[in-house]
Length: 490
Ligand code: BGP
Image (tube, rainbow, N blue to C red; front, side, top):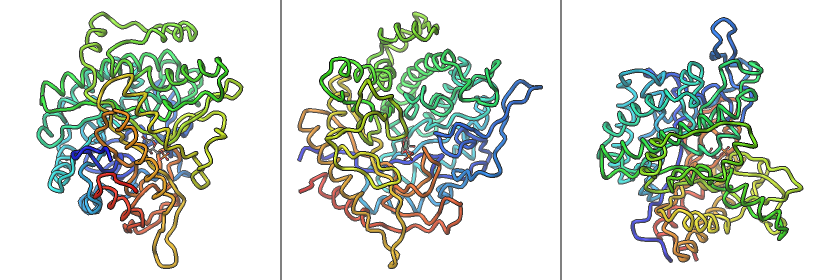
């Protein structure tokens, strides 16, 4: 087996899917708080003709489960102990920006928010789990979006710099692994959440806020996010040379296979990789603005201009490691439209993949894809990699004995970890494997509790009812064995 002795084994969650307490102790809404799921196209905001701004307007008919989620805000000590019970030596979560700067543009931070995360990170340290902290997991303060249009406005760079400076200073010595913007390369699929951008200057159709967000505004957000990412690396290193600042990209899209050896499909698969992943990965990891974007900008009729100073900043402050999510592969055939969801791209069905997760989501299972993704990313960037999301969501319920025999989840993680081992043998440097959703939380894409990823079950349901009681599933013990064996799977 090839796992190094200091390999990080653990799990990953996100503030907006775990904590709840959406308005507690001074927090103001993040953009996720007005969405049932991040894939929703009808955010709970409405256009005010007088102020010419959007404002929050939740739909009383909808269940925004993330507002309470699984009450992690009050239960994290108990939950972190449960995680340690599997032998975790690392744990990923995010800081909800809106707990620290509720509207995002304040001069002073919210002490209650800072104190909450300080206690959480101390708890992780006491349990000997390395915190891996996402600075924004789709959690742009809603006010920055409705007041400024979000990341298309360069003023967000300074608000962001104030936020990251505050948390780097406060958690110095507690946290050293940081991630900037979760799956920011989803910017064109879900611009409101992934890039925190909304067209508010004369939106084409104010009743369709996402549809009327222009490509120019998304590319302007791209421009400002690249600068903000580089600034985060610079500030992080200045405050603590121990800091490792990484990017976090959804990278199932790296495993985009040509459907056949038709050269058009081979070229199409490469372009899919570029426009779904590398267009952020290349600036973050190589410090370059990819020249293949010039054709894209021309085709889209947008203007994107980086100053020489910005280009130098991006060149100089590239990330220390490349973190990513992998759930499944996809297959590119020029005859089939390319779609996407939180698991990655969708295209033509791959006839060679016989393994599939149970319905209703039924994502194809391709463990070789994680080995391929690790190799492609390592060959391209020559940076330490970290898997910070891999897992399977299942519609599962307690059986008559109050147990959950989640054999499919055991199968899924065993096959993927075997392929991570093969990637290490291929020469890839991978720092860790953090399973997505080690405790049941609110699904990102659908906003449901029904889609359960956890090794630990939480008694909460789509209609919002439940005791929030935690219960261990069979997979909890299997993952514990795998960690104890440092990845050895016969
Ligand atoms: C990723 C997100 C996570 C997580 C995961 C699974 O895109 O970074 O937040 O939710 O997808 O997606 P889902 O919860 O929709 O199954």
